[in-house]
Amino acid sequence: MKKKNKIMFFLITILAGFMLAIQFNTTHQENNLADDTSDLWELRQQYLSEKELETYFHQQIRQSEDKIAQYETERHNRNGQVLQDTLNELKKEAGLKEISGPGIILSITPAYEYITPGQSKVYISPDVLRKLINELNMYGAKAISIADQRIISTTTIRNIQGETKVDGYPLRKFPLEIKIIANDHETVKKLYNQMQISTVPDDFFIDNLKVSISEPQEEIIIPAYSSSVSVNHMQTVKEERK
Image (cartoon, rainbow, N blue to C red; front, side):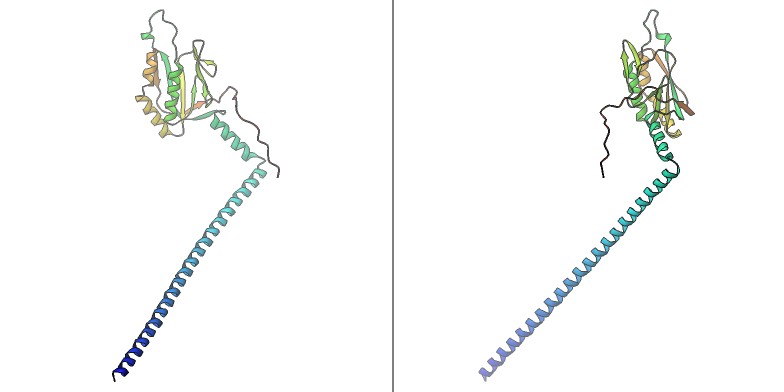
């Protein structure tokens, strides 16, 4: 009887182990199936994202091609007018064209009440002028002229034989007008207010010069740069053959 019970216990143990093994294998297969499904879903989502990105790039390329075609058509129909307009705009930005707009005018005059008899002629410091121009540019000046001499990026202001000159033009006559133009009326007001508290007029006063600042004006005309523009360190680029 005991032997029979042992046999039964042994058989039950084997059966239980077999059932556990089947259950474990089934669970493992289900987990693998779930993992495979998850991987497939991720791949599908990635594929869809890539397709959307590809579609977007195709749209951007088509829009760019349309703009190029439109530009070429317009240039052909207008006989190069587009290029001429672009050239004129570049010349205006470089100071090679007359410009007008809202602005202010600074007038510099000798402070005769502080000039003693026998004193040498009034001298305008090039350093103070450069400081003034830097300050005006800092607060939004679009175009500047000194004694109707347009100031551009290559302008030189220096002392030559005891006389201050702007691109070789001597500053001798008074009152000396400095015209400033800005992009809009708001910027002009900002320029006007900054000049009211600027220390630059004090620097001029040290040299016995007074600076008066006009109220913002609706339109000021600044002439084009009159001297020739020298271009250094540039060379012609040869077009590559196709």
